[in-house]
Image 1 (cartoon, helix red, strand yellow):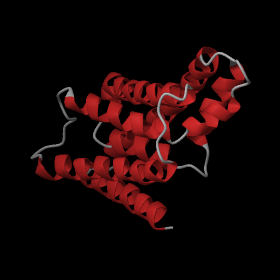
Image 2 (cartoon, rainbow, N blue to C red):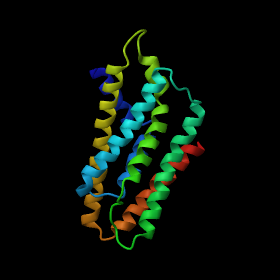
Image 3 (cartoon, one colour):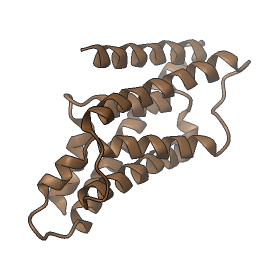
Image 4 (cartoon, rainbow, N blue to C red):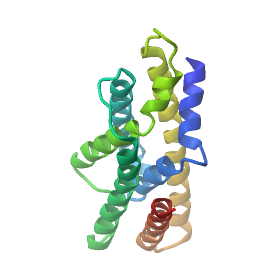
Length: 188
């Protein structure tokens, strides 16, 4: 199982597949280090969605056109960025979003992102091998790597909050950077 954990970590931290990094950073921008529990729950919702579609695809229960998924993944990140703009520009003061809808949205986006890697997981399995240990290990690795990114992002945001008085402006600027990087990813 250790190899699958390592593979999950590498999947998230792979510099050639920055979509996960962009997505995680995009939904961290509305939170502070004090919101670590909330953001950890969001990351777990994403991993649950990711796990469901990975399992279904690895078991040949669903089959989705990979080109469609590769189009939808950046769209999910852009939607996250647009929601960030909405939240940051309409709020009179900065605060993290409330409510449970965001968890379902993140879970749904996890379903889409999981389909982007499902063919690879199917190819990794040996003939007749159970999917349980590989899927569990892979998703543990994904969760660990995502939480590392969350901690790093929240620490950077916390530092900028202490050094700069324009908390909202910093988050808007970072959201714009993520948006532009995703648009570049789509257009190349």
